[in-house]
Each structure stands twice: as C-alpha cells, then as structure tokens.
Amino acid sequence: MKYLEKTLKVLANRRRLAIIKLLLKKRELSVSDIAESIRLSFKATSKHLNILRQLDIVDRRQVSLTVYYRLLYPLPPVVQSIIKHISNSRESLSQKFG
Image 1 (cartoon, rainbow, N blue to C red):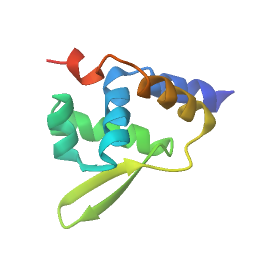
Image 2 (cartoon, one colour):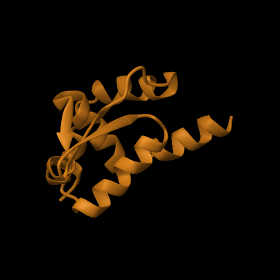
Image 3 (cartoon, helix red, strand yellow):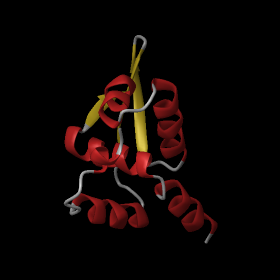
Image 4 (spheres, one colour):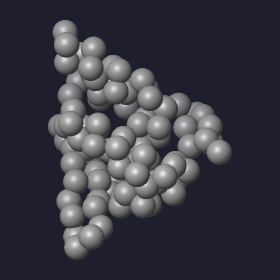
C-alpha cells in the first residue's frame, strides 16, 4: 500500500506527467531537452527526473557531461495504467505551462 501511495503522489504532479508523456513520444532525451520542452529550469527538471528515477519509472545514461533519460520498461502496473490514460489525453500537458 505504501508503494501505491508514494507512486500516486509522484504521478500527481503535472510536470512529471509532462515528462512521462514527452518520453513516450521521444523515447530518450537529455535533461536540457526535457527542460526546454516543458518550460522549466534545468535544475527543477533534474529534480523531477530524479524523483521518477527513484520509483524506477525512468532510467538514465550519461555521455560525457550530458545525462539522457528514458522510460524504464517494464513499468509497474499502476504506472502503465496512468500512462495509458495520459497517452489517450487530447490535451497536451506541455500547453498548460508558460
């Protein structure tokens, strides 16, 4: 039950949902590309990505000084369910920012 509660709290953030939706489309992006796409600072984006990484939702790889993130498969069932819902959403989450 604790895992479910923690996961739902993490996914209750529009910025993190926007990151997930973006990674569904682009597969893998650098922190700076993600930050630019969701109109958030590099530092704040990095913090959101680390939170998603702690729950095994995203994985990272580093090439020199650039860190790239991608969704980590297989995703937990609750995350899959939420992703399915946001993937079908007509409203772009990134349009809400700015």
